[in-house]
Image (cartoon, rainbow, N blue to C red):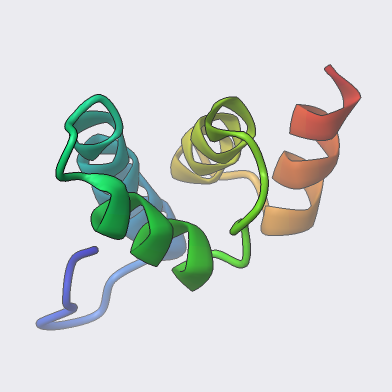
Length: 74
């Protein structure tokens, strides 16, 4: 997760978190980073595919609820 140093949008945070999540996911030592990102977005317990889809949609400007609904509908 990034720490804001000024005004930061949800889209910017989601984009940074998605990049960090994608980097940490295949790493044997990345579990704690993935869990922290999932918890920060209230996505803990969802499969990595759903987490990635939600973060990607938010990074593209979608709202959280719409992004989660769309990811779960697939």
